[in-house]
Image (cartoon, rainbow, N blue to C red; front, side):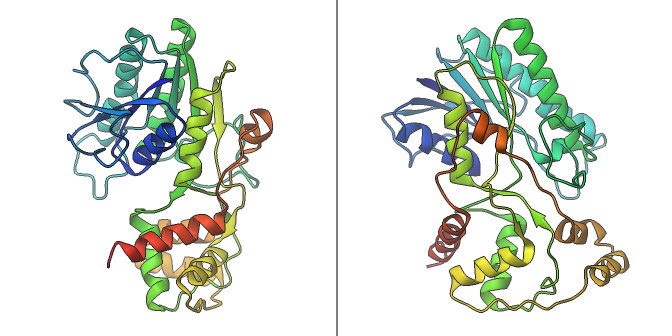
Length: 318
């Protein structure tokens, strides 16, 4: 199939292009900077440089069967925008509709939109989130991801285009940054972590599994649309994740059994309540609809994914 991928030189985008190429599909990679996909299969990946973040001046796209929309305005630390929600909407909602219009002109029959668990909310409703649960996003990123889901679904109904929404939780894998990278550094250095008593489980997805799910829903022959959650299917607690990282580093897990109530109190005192809540509260997603409904299976286990992530982290510093 002919597949267009936005955000193709990003963390998930590169893995997605690789998965599509490995399956024999031809890929047009939309990138902001040329050369971002130079290490991928040059016979099957063709770059097209875009001029702006919200695709307002998107040039004509080549004929394609499927478009995967990964590009987005993600979390901005210390956002200085006068209207943060408006800035997010310009990229995540209007930009997504601009992409959908261009895709329609290119003959695309199916659009795969990568949303986020943030479109549902920060916590869980006492059990894993299901696709039909009423969402309650709280920050501009989550709010606009949900708005984009709904706007694209409406566009698809009006124009006869299949729209598939995938909602991933935390994505990890080789090249991961932010909090997961910081956690790896702490485990590698043997820093004592006060998380030994935290049994709250949180869903995750290995970047290779997410890329494979994108390939699966994007290129399957059967009619496909709707919202699907995608996870590794093996939710770990923070303490279990630290032990798995320590095993991959071949180091002891230095976990201190500090009660969650103490950690939350410390979060209030230090102004880090949001960060502590993310560590001590469960956030699970039910991905059985993608598995049992469509028949997708993650090709990589959590243990394998964590081991590959650690190995890439170590190799990057040699």
